[in-house]
View 1 (cartoon, rainbow, N blue to C red):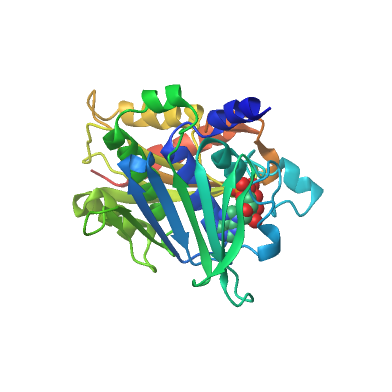
View 2: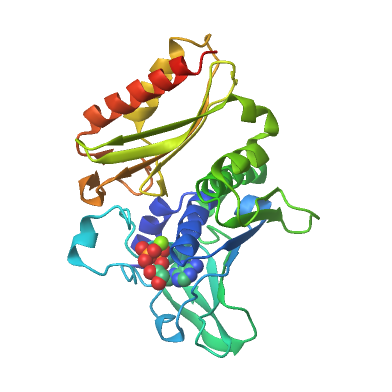
Length: 327
Ligand code: ADP
Ligand code: MG
């Protein structure tokens, strides 16, 4: 059974950045205003995330790393909602099956912090009182220690660090009210740092360089017919990058949508030379009940009701925003 669980967990957590994404979402769900991340070997040796959110109650510590246990399903309808996005209480459980997991946490009402470690969904060592501030620190060590082939396949800490850094960058841009830091253990200074009260475009500048600022166009659309809202920034036609950088959030979760990506690419493709790409950050809000959560957990691809109509409307808005910018 452990082997089956481990294989399932390895499907959800394929590399350090997948684990980190889940943990960042948990910290955001816990209303943190500061999220500090440290890594060793691109997260393969150590991936630690410290937040100042609500914390986990001592009584909940026995079950947080158990599969399908979540504190986030309040109503039956939530089962269909994107609010939990198909990972219902699976993230910490999965991590505990493929790495050494330690949680230190303190809620506002508890007098001290507690620290516990987990293996295969259960306590490896029961909670012990310790000193600590309100919030949660989750430490993931030796990822895939028990999956030698997977470990072997991930042999570039530098590549993993790039992916980790991309995930932090994207969440930092989407959540400017939260301060994010990313550092490599043993190095002085931060690989990335955003202020606690910032804005979307200030964080874009901090992360992607101030050069991009003059080329950013705000874009916004609210549609009463298909009941969606989209807001964000796209670059004008002066901006031409060799690499694609696109950030898409649907209901505040970082996702992929092939259809939307292809539509936006096709708009820019008619203006930009071959091999030149825009930057865009878009936040789409939909009725959670219209988003399909039955996608494979490792594919961040999502589908939603009226997808083609909604994508077409966004495409037209991108086009008219570009044309109105007059460059
Ligand atoms: P889910 O997020 O779907 O509930 P997870 O496995 O990601 O499942 O987390 C399990 C539970 O652990 C959460 O429901 C939450 O109660 C608790 N939890 C995890 N991380 C944090 C955190 N950083 N702060 C507060 N609670 C957390
Ligand atoms: Mg979660």
